[in-house]
Image 1 (cartoon, rainbow, N blue to C red):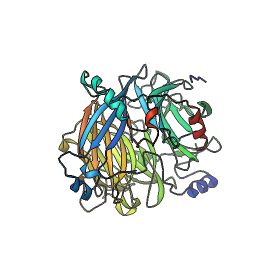
Image 2 (cartoon, rainbow, N blue to C red):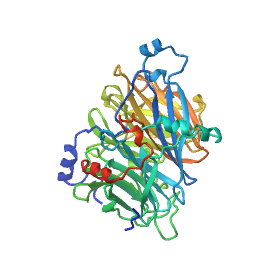
Image 3 (cartoon, rainbow, N blue to C red):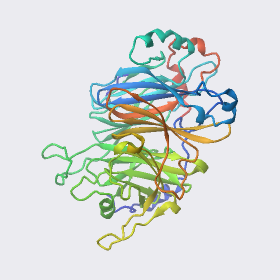
Image 4 (spheres, helix red, strand yellow):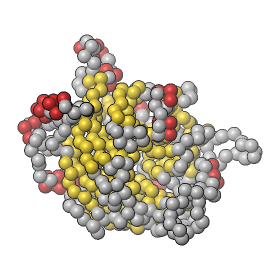
Length: 504
């Protein structure tokens, strides 16, 4: 499978593009990472964690949560299913020397379509500083009992438990970029999007891994040398930093190095739609002075008040934009810390919060609902801030929980028990190589009058021994009936191609 192949200020643009953006209604994503997993009372919960590292290592870890043996069966029937899953066992499922340089990003696809008597699979894509995109097949099911029994001897002679799965294997490598890979994403099962420092975003079809289209982002002109500029003498920093595909799969936003703007792309025509410039006053309020780069590092779609919005992450703050492409609010307020990852979480009652991982081992949760946005008072210069500030609902981790070091990435896994009560499991990856598993209860993310509540209970931690750069996770699903005997048999990928056609 190896293959190589300005408009005006913010809020400006054509009337036609504005109308098209407004017609996009809030769309709920239904990928495996956002759909609540149904828990069975008294059953186990198995989480597959995948972490990439500076050390070129791709590490697969399985976390199995079981009810404590000391809990009587009668008590299991009366308590919340997720509350009793407190005993965590970690085990290595795979350890690949995936790249020849640091791994920068990774992505998981939705599950393959269910077929009676056959197992389901998940595609894994990784990107690194070696210009390569590696593709892997992962099993969507926990290892069978026979596999666990056969590997007891192996686990007894290794420093850490091992629970390998023969379904986890490499499929091949994509080589259609000419520089470092900074972002990969599966908007659906049939497409893989990848961004690189060569200022391009590629669209690959997963059925045959052919490159369908390449979005070419302009390279910025040389305009001085701001702090943090690592470009060569006489050059300018270039390359895509991040992109985000709308849940409708019709439009995409991207941010690049050396640019004070976002770019809106039409995925149906494959052409650029608009350029949305950041206002100078807004950049100043989020700490991007004229001596800084002024570029955005992260961008992600979400929703609040049943309306779509998107978050744009800078070095030390996050701006929230509405579908009118105007800044709605900022998040960090008076919190001075570096921003690493941003994700939207759907809470109780279809409300959402924005989760931000930072330095100091914390994940902060903000509400961007209209009633939770406040205007800051006048500053020392008697000027009222241009942007309102979202409410900090809660925080997880930090020194109060005995956690230090930056959280480079995290994954959010919603679950729902038989009583329709929702909770969340968070998997965090610190730069020191520690993976931690947390649980958030049903009311932990609700907006209350109490400011900055400390939420979350750490269920366990696992030291990988590698400096983590990126992380993803998914909840494994039970093996279908009749698929137990084929656990150690490799299946052909011809059926997989047929499954991906249905996602076009």
